[in-house]
Amino acid sequence: MKISDIQFGMLRVPLKTPFKTALRTVEQVEDIVVMVRTDDGHVGYGSAPATAVITGDTHGSIMDAVRHYISPRLIGQDIANLNRVTHLVQGAMEKNSSAKAAVEIAVYDLWGQLYGAPLYKLLGGGDPVVTTDITISVDYIDKMVADSIDAVERGFESLKIKVGKDIGVDIERTRAIHAAVEGRALLRLDANQGWTAKQAVYALQTLEDAGVKLELVEQPVKAYDLEGLRYVTERVHTPVMADESVFGPMEVIELIRMRAADIVNIKLMKTGGISNAVRIADICGMHGIECMIGCMLESSIGVAAAVHLAVAKADVITKVDLDGPSLCQYDPVTGGVIFNESEITVTDAPGLGIREIRGLVAVADDKAA
Ligand SMILES: C[C@H](N)C(=O)N[C@H](CCC(=O)O)C(=O)O
Ligand SMILES: [Mg+2]
Image (cartoon, rainbow, N blue to C red; front, top):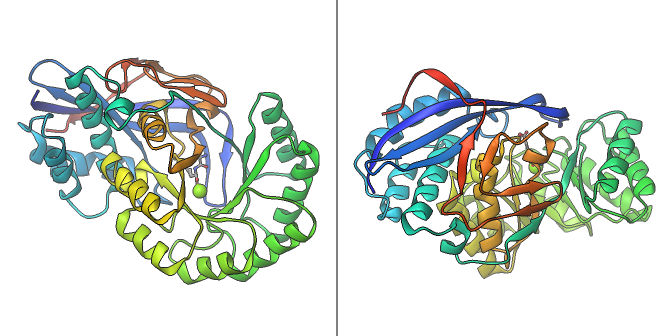
């Protein structure tokens, strides 16, 4: 099974409600879909959103990276040599993690198809169901409380509450949601870099003193501020999770060396795909550090790959934030992973199991090769 061609499509899916964080507001998912074709007629699917404020990647940069740097190295490569192929993807250029992720996801899809096995089984197997949280966008307090109650009534047992806009209002937001859901859901805060280290300690200690128990706080300070992250981790009882501060394995090793956080958020769009995500899970497992598997605001194509990884690495990946598809008005993908609110189930279809993607629009000059 040799790679013969790589093509693109654009997939847009409207959200149920705007997605708002300290970094951005988005009204629809917009993914570049990568289709890797082989000489024996198979196609592997991958995708990447343009999360420029986090990864630096745009739709244009994703397509340019695949077209001019990654694709020329892959044409003619045999999918059976998975490690060689992923090595070529990772070494094609610096950064551009979303482009690398989209291609790697498609390659792993083909690897599963080659052996007629679902990806999670090739990655080690596991129980085929995972439970995700759901994001509560940062907004007026009443709106966030209403969204939280609605999510709990829909069966979500963990809420990922977006904060990081205004420290005083963030404390009030969290207290109001805590009071409204009355222990019916775990509360995770994600400040998306919106606080200083001192603000974070103040906010978290205030909430702790008020009896607001949080499962964790995600990325309280700027991505580059590892000292600040450690400052917070050392001063609060609430477990601190690194998200934007860590992309690949080397950054995770440094984070662990510094003891800067308690938990690591693995996202395929940061790691450049599955090969480095597996490495991170293994590094964290060796050091007794728990991981969350997260996603960007993206469609069920890329998230499906993250679900397979979560199933196979459930010993280390103990927390799941794969709610991208749940935030969409519909799932354009047929086959593969089944997203049903908080419950996500992998099937035993080969690879990712994707049979059809509705609404995929061709992009001009779509040939990556
Ligand atoms: C969608 C997911 N629950 C989430 O919140 N991810 C964000 C970044 C998503 C984005 O801006 O596209 C995060 O964990 O920071
Ligand atoms: Mg985050």
